Amino acid sequence: MPEQTDSIAAGRRTAPRRLVLVRHGQSLGNVADAEARKAGHGRLALDYRDADTPLSDLGTEQATALGAHLARLPEAHRPEVILSSPYARARGTAETALRGAGLDHSLVLDERLRERDLGIFDGLTGDGIRAEHPEEAERRTKVGKFYYRPPGGESWCDVALRVRSVLADIRQEYADEHVWIFSHQAVIMSFRLVLEGLDEEGIITIDNETPLPNCSMTSYDRAEDGSLELVAYAETAALDDEGAQTTHEEPAAGEADA
Image (tube, rainbow, N blue to C red; front, side, top):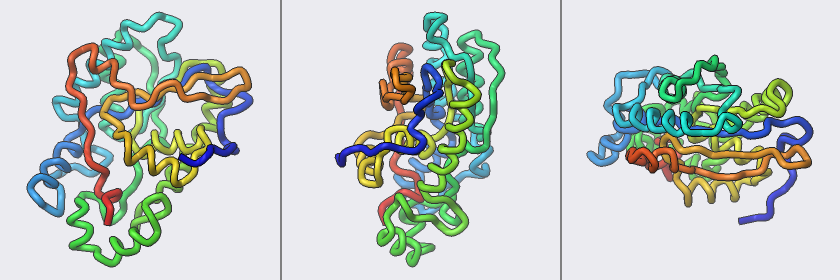
């Protein structure tokens, strides 16, 4: 992996004592995507818009397992501030986990933590993209998935811009606190990009080589110089301890190699 570089938004000066990024539990969209790929279909059989897609039964079990993990944490390690994407699967994960842990914290919803918008690729598998939008599949291959923006959607860079914005607010509003964020795969990868000063090759390598499981935790601790240092990535100990099934999926439709 290339050497990391300094980042203008690397979390120096003021920063939370701990930042924990939780990916939502398995959603009905994850299930529909897996079924469509297995059947060789180009489009997901899903009636929900992306923002409203709820957790699957297994996803609820995963969120409940996370809640049990939270309940066992020492008081000093429990979250003090909880932010979430407003999308149903992320919000549902947060609410289920908090309820299971017996925590009555207010949930701060922030639209900047929403999933990456896939534009015209929404609801399509990789096969569907190639069949319905061959010219875009070719353009994506040329541009590369880091910089490529599907028509009407967002590139990874667009998501990173949102993350830089919300990080600035977190550093200012929640300095020295334990902050937990419930969000999505592309958003969590963008936090890694920004906080660790990664480049295109570095973040794509991580994304390709280490899947981000549903309800996994990625954690950062504040260092003496105020930067946020990675402690754990894609950790599933909370699920393992409760015997909950770990799931992850192939890259999202808009991420499939063209």
